[in-house]
Image 1 (cartoon, rainbow, N blue to C red):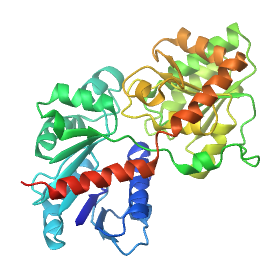
Image 2: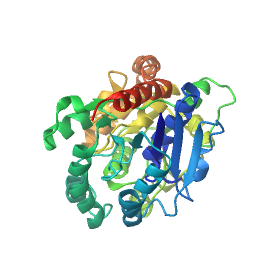
Image 3: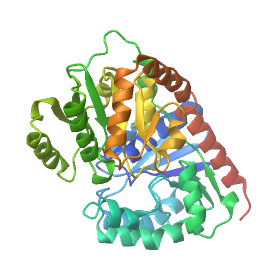
Length: 380
């Protein structure tokens, strides 16, 4: 079987999409040396997919992956010729949108939130452009109907997809993402240290407005004023929309500038140490299609407080303390419970270790490979 994997939605800077596809491709290489894989890459993401196996081949396409117009033109008009040239049997499209004239069977992965218009109107009016929103509005329903099979990365996405678009239920299945083994391997490593002074509360995420770092900061202010906690707040993540300056102004106004640390984006190989050395990790996102940082923190033995929205409760199970991400008081009370109750901390850590065993990239790859085989063997 000749399988083409469209990687054009991935850039080195993009968090969840990059983590998903890079780990999935690596895991497919570990379990499958029989099928031929053609990785359709771009000049800026080619280095992410450096697979040495003979059955994995790269085809570099001439575009900048983050330009949605160029990406759409390539996916809708150019991919067909590569598919024909290499006799592709199955096209794997993990970036939410299908290639409408692919000339072969196609599997679509939905790993982004379906409610793009709601996100733009309610949570992030400046973070999603009109052209991107319109592209979602038009292309998502068409893509879903065009695909031979759809993979959703969470039950929440599956439920919302079936609610919004009239498709047969058997056409879509859920395959969860996995946890990078590096986080588990670094667990309890005595040499695993971060540069942030303890004790501290940790937030890791791209600083989009709907990730609610501002509400977390307000909860931290309440804890400092009412409970006099000794902790600092460490905020880690890239900032594509200038949220850091807004957050710094809040910290300055509350005279907490020295106790709120903005670390920016950190190299992947440093993240496990950052998780492990935190007293508590909090993930108060309002919009989430999966919520991988929750599992990463659990794998590193850090107690987790997480949002009760969208897919996050599904991924967290009973291994995290759930909060309303819009309720600052509830968030501050949950943080205080975790940092002051040793028994609760131990319970969350133990449950976290048990929870992450359910999510491995090897499992994700094996289930995805089964879908490849199913779609390839199906009759048009």
